[in-house]
Image (tube, rainbow, N blue to C red; front, top):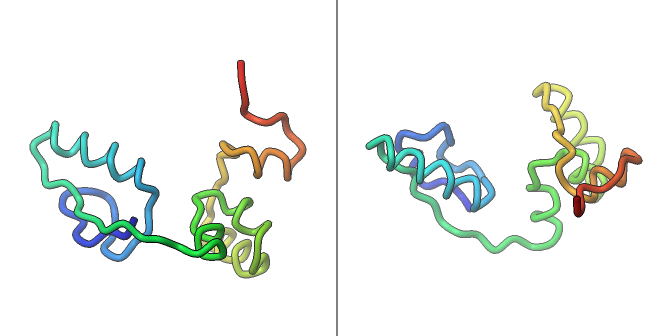
Length: 98
């Protein structure tokens, strides 16, 4: 989704965020009596969707590797390795099952 109005949230106007993350943040804001963020749903092509993931390792494996890794390094990003793809890339067990 794209944030249209950040309200009282930490999101920035125009920022692309995962739907579930916005829903959780908005629920918390509403419980606290604050203004939730408004957003619009987006339909992204496969290239944009792959590059828009929160995992920069996953995004770098798809296209524009140098740009993605450079931006992550400059921003001091840290990948939490929560998904299947990024765990396979770094040679760890996948987060599946118990």
